[in-house]
Image (cartoon, rainbow, N blue to C red; front, side, top):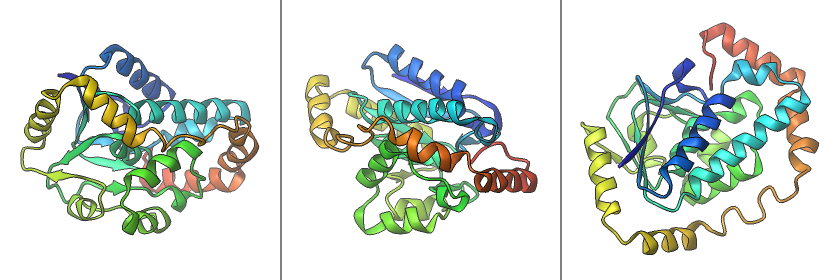
Length: 239
């Protein structure tokens, strides 16, 4: 088993350093089965909003491209990728959860899981939206995306954001990873590619889309005001 444990500031927020760390660890795993989790009491509480609020247009374009590349690499990883969702999985953290083949959480009612991007007025990058549309069950995807709610683990399970809840979540995730790792790796990779290969096809092929539409939206005064208000209320650096 190859473990990737996010261990960063602000509940493992997804800043540029964390996203590059994840890409580097995926490369290091080199096709081995992976257990993905977070340090402390959070999986990942989302993007590093302090960094997001600090970026100019050029910096935001690079940040969003890195986000798309990292999520695509997780989603397309050919070997078994099991997530132990050990706490909050919010916004970008929830998208990472969706990238996993199997997702296990502990029954902690204070953990929050969901896609609340619209509550901040953030536009979904094309590959991120493609992953969401592919992985959230059709009957729940509009509630999950357009409702922009955060859910406790049992509700997240009912909505298809999780696959399993277990008292010992880590042990359950490790068992599932070991089970999948026992399969022929070439057969697993081929089946996974057949299931997911079309999901990202065409998403983000227009290289100018991020610069033309997303960057102005993500660097707008309205977004910065919402981020400042959120950070002022909670003292959080992520979401």
